[in-house]
Amino acid sequence: MTAPKVPAADATLRLLTFLASRRAPVAAARIAEELALPRSRTYDLLATLVEHGYVLHLDQERLYGLGPSAHELSGAYLRQEPLARIGRRVVESMVDEVGESGHLAVLHGRDVLYVVEERARNRPSLVTDVGVRIPAHLTASGRAILAELPAAQLRILYATSADFTARTEQPGPTSPQELRRLLSEVRTEGIARESGEVSDGMGSVAAAVRDHTGWPAAAVALTLVQERASPADRARCAVAVRRAAEEITRRLGGRQAPAPSLR
Image (cartoon, rainbow, N blue to C red; front, side):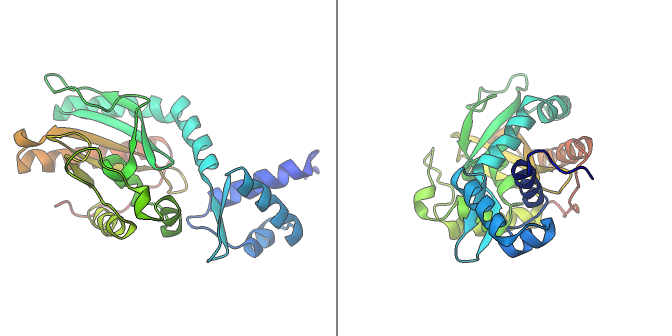
């Protein structure tokens, strides 16, 4: 193989690619070994990437994982072309089938950012729209994505109660412990839900979309008027978002999760 013309850039990109392929943060010694890099050079690269936010250092565990800057680059790529283009047709079909408004969102720090929004006919206007950001822990879309993150990544995003906010009188989780319990339920069911935490009188269901590494790249959701939604309506929407998420995952070349039974 031809030697790289810019070794430092080559090593940096290989390091980021390696971290992106891991489901959880890893030790510096493991990174150095896997990439055949001197340990001192590995630590220098990591320190620079931490400074710029592309890598996060978990002090207590002595591990390294992708940082928010790296995820924002990934989100920007997905927003610009493939995810929005692929997801739009799937969301449109889902909305036509179910008759409720649908969305596709990506994680952006501790927020979800909406990249596709399809309004159903004769349904109320919503606060969600393309380019809108809402705290992830309050939304069904955000919960679907957060439930699939490694525990260490979740601890970084939500370290204290100060990281939690509310939009309505119906509060969402207010502490890391409450969020972990909620996300455990999401993982068990395979579907995330919210009821009035984003907008009074509205509720949503969502399922995660995965990329080729199994990482939660996005979430697809449907929003209902709660007082009009029967248990059968809610169950139908849950099935629809899971089916749509699986289809977008397939079109992205991603890995699907085993299908749990829906309650």
